[in-house]
Each structure stands twice: as C-alpha cells, then as structure tokens.
Image (cartoon, rainbow, N blue to C red; front, side, top):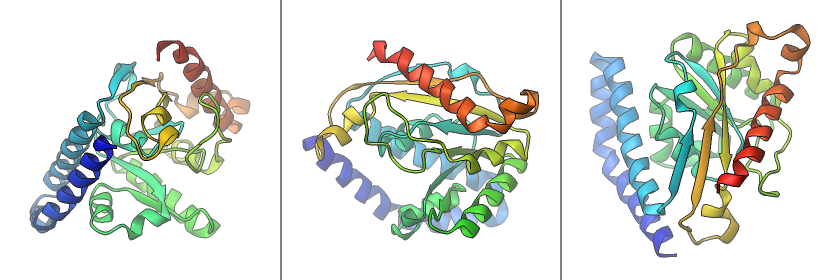
Length: 244
C-alpha cells in the first residue's frame, strides 16, 4: 500500500509541476517541432523511470536489439496498467500509444499524451475507430512508431491467457509496410492488478520479438496476420513463464 501511495503522490506532483512545462514545450515547438518532440519524450520517460523504481520491479528484458531503428508497430499483450509505463520508458524513438477514448478526459495527463502523439480510440464508434487507425498510419509515414494492445482491453484472465486480437490494428502495418514488433509480457498483473491496491515488488519479463514485415509474408499469413502475431506472443509468454 505504501508503494501505491508514493506512486500516486509522485504522479500528482509531476502533473501539477508540468503546467509550466506545457507552455515551455509549446513555445519550443513553435520554433523546432523535433526538439519539442524529443524533450517531451525524455521528460515523460524520466517520470515513468521514477515510477518503475518506486514499484521495486525486477525487470528482465530480452531481444531489445530486435527493434529496428525505424518507425514500427509495436504489438503487445495487455495485462496491467503498468504495461504502458514499463514499455514506454524503453522507447528509443518517438512512439504514440493507442489508448481508450476515456483517457482523453484525464486532466494534464492527456496533454502529455497528445504531445507524444498518443491516440484515443473510441471502441463503440466504428467510424471514429477507423479515423484513429488512419491517423496512426499517417504518423508511421511521418516517422513515428505506434504501440497498440490489440486485445482491445486489459486482460484480467489467467496469467498466460490472451484475448482475441482486433484486426484493425494491423492495418497500420499492412498499409505502410512498417515492421511489426511483438512485445510479450509476463507476470505484469502480479505487480498490481492481482492484489489491488497494493503494488508488489515482482519479477517481470519482457521480450521483443523479431520484426515482422507484412509484405514478406505469404498471402494467407498476411490475410490472418492478427492470429499470426498473437500466436508468436502466446508461444513467447508460455516459454518465458519459466523465468518468473
């Protein structure tokens, strides 16, 4: 419980202290958009790094060298609110996360998200959802990576289980030709969701898979690319279960 209170207190203080930073970043962006993008990325990564240290998590990262130095589509299984914190802290390039529409109403936090090209997906509105995917496609074309959890919601089932993947997410890769990088996450729910509101010091394993280029897949595999990527992630989390 103590860790949870510390994290919430830090997050509140960070967001409040961000108010003058928003103006500074806005001014910087008027003169140099790239400088604003990178400084916003590093500021948020610093904050996430502090939160990670507060959780006391022991983190094993495998295959990070597999991530190419180019805009990619990260695809991961979704077990915890901390999935975003831990994976975003490791992004080497500017990366926008696709989040649920409700996150847009969070004061101050949503400003940082917009600065960092995060997108808000309305899961109840197909037309709005398509518009979000089209925007993500444009971001990738402009050099910004995208991360999405295509289960569509946080999975609170058995540890090694996965929900069905939503196919729409993969259009970001098939329409741009960018690489898909699978992210397989083990034991994340044991940090927090398995015993709310206590944040537990635990061992988490993250593995970045080999990049998958849609245009190099055969026609049938490309047609069912969601299941193809899901199976890779499922096999990896099954394998890495022995490490936690």
